[in-house]
Image 1: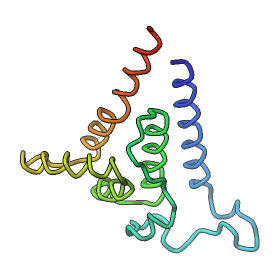
Image 2 (image 1 turned 120 degrees about the vertical axis):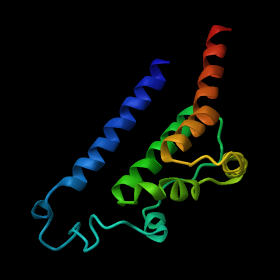
Image 3 (image 1 turned 180 degrees about the horizontal axis):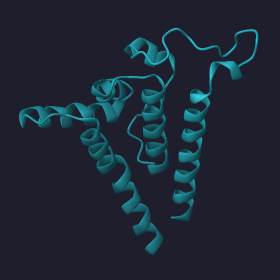
Length: 145
């Protein structure tokens, strides 16, 4: 459990560093233009631009650390690429492959049949229930054996 807490703390620190670097004024970058602010900073990005940022794909691994790290990395990419909040689920689920994609297609179908508005918070809750909390329970059970 301590290992999981350390991993989550390290992920949070890494995300904070990325956000802080992005918030640096243009003047703090080097003179040859590397890292210079692009003309679209702050403008909502397309799916193509989001994909160029190379967010990780997730295949439905039962490893809770991999699931958590992948989710946080995709969320960080959504934020740093200025993806509109109402597109978070669409863009994030594009990164699901294999078993994870099949899970989401079924989950989305059920939610649509219930006329549920699929928000980022709802997606995060469903993802955690499927890939994070179940694995965490299994890890605790193994520790008790």
